[in-house]
Image (tube, rainbow, N blue to C red; front, side, top):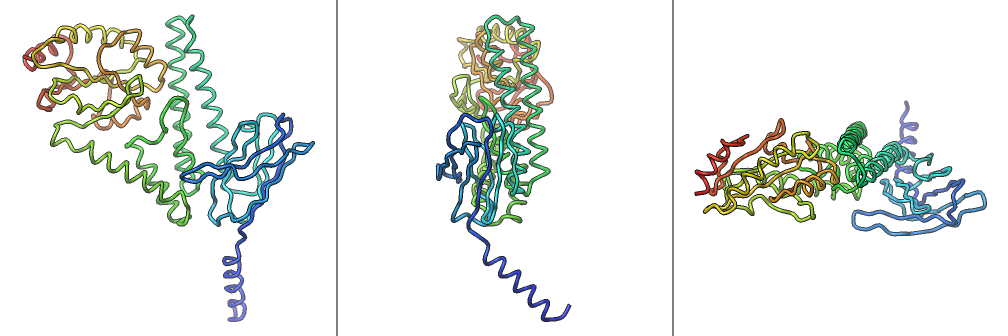
Length: 380
């Protein structure tokens, strides 16, 4: 290649980079919709704002012309009939989004690789979340037999973890896409973010490293790095057991209140791990209730901090109320993915740890008469 040709190619490349358009178009057709108009929302790390609207034509057609669009793809929502379609739009994009009937379930995308990736994640995710809602609605029925209730609990748990596996697969396979960032922050009905447990920091870090290389100017990078820093700080805090003698926990009770394990300092505490969906939970709790009542007036107070490793909020709350559990009942509804499982190295259920009034772990997996003999010694 001669110098003239090489120079022309370099000049063309520089010109293309320097003159990237800050405009974009979004058009398409929503067939079979009763909506009369559609809205466009811009989503930033701090706000979600409607920036434009368009009337649907007789054939359901619409068009948006966007200005001042960043070169790095940014998140927008196309809103029709209350349903939101997430889009990742960059300057220069000419994006087409069509749908027939149900907007979210049936929409198609053309003109944006990132938005197509987002669609591949979002549609199955929404379908899974709707299935969880339907199972939860059945579970709430008052006429269910116990066998039906258990079957629904198992079905809910299986679907929850299926969604999590698919979400993880998508994130790992598309770690350098902004669609993966979006997937990290999605949540299921009644739960906190699926990937905000401290043990999930590895997924946030994997995506952040890839995004930093591909989209260093992305407005979503710094919030992602900030989330990683907060997770690292929490891990550092809960891993420091020198002062308390045990890893601290802070989880929500059935009323949504956060209760920290270390707030029970000075008492003898049994940290009990269980699952409402386990077949033996009623029997074990009945035995523990007898022990709890026996030491209710002991000179040194005795308390139970019971951690549920369930994913169904309905199943957990129902068990706590039906069994009339008198102690502290908490959960993060992340099942075996709970950070508490890693902190206490839980490999099976049931499991428990006994802490004396000085904050020292003195026993593990202790039940029945063995537990009572130890409590006789610690609570006198």
